[in-house]
Length: 161
Image (cartoon, rainbow, N blue to C red; front, side, top):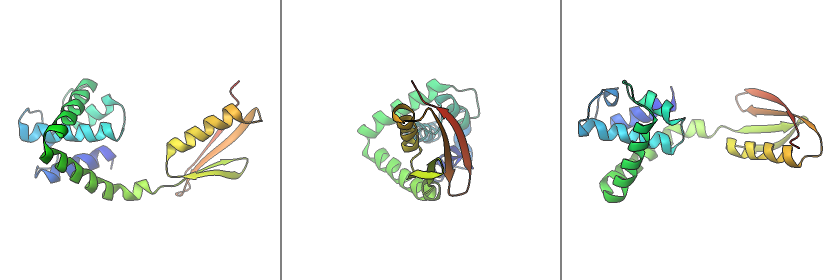
């Protein structure tokens, strides 16, 4: 299951909608607002490009501007309506509990066979790789990124000059 689907399912459950009902083309408030919340949460969590989010949260031809509009609208409404803000906070907590298994994933960054970083944040790995390539003493590096599930990616990298 994609994370976008998890977000959609949980928001639909929270608002008592039938599965997939937020993907129906309609402007009715009881459907539109949950759909905008899904798009807001997906953008906030950076689950993909805006076009990808639009394509996966509606069943008709929407584009990135729809997601931008949803994000701006819900951001504004969260500041104005405390009930909506509370609802979104509850939904975020529900999703956070469901995602805990995915979030506990560990990444191991290895260089020349030695673990040089263990983290659950992929961004930390990218920062470390950048540091290695800009500040490292060698011209070539073999970098290996491994998860606990033994999924490995090996990269041959050249120093940035």
